[in-house]
Amino acid sequence: MLLQTVRPNIVQAIRAYRVEDLMQAAQEAGQHFLYANLSEAQSKQDVLEGIAQAFLFPAHFGKNLDALHDCMTDLVHKAGSQPGFVVVLEQLPDNVRFDREAREQLLDVFRDTADYWADRKVPFRCFYSFQ
Image (tube, rainbow, N blue to C red; front, side, top):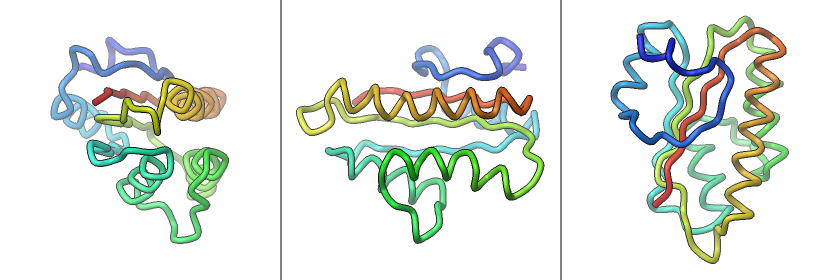
């Protein structure tokens, strides 16, 4: 199984993995698969809106990094026991409106989310790629 070769709570570049294989591995493991194709996004706001739409966040989502963290942790945790997560953020922008610092801030939210779920013994794997 593909997920056995990847640490259970990690944020990493997608590199050699294919989205289809990750989706299948999540299904086989009975875990949630969350996918956002962000190829149209140009700014931090675009990225947050794209993630919110793709992950079906509630309408009151604040479209900021704190709200993203809350939706990925507390909101989901309150929904009940979780089997695990495989998250794919494909085609994150790489431009002046979403520069290296903005990307690192976003990925830090997912790293904090991985830590949150690790504390609860729930696997959370996040894979990303850049445009």
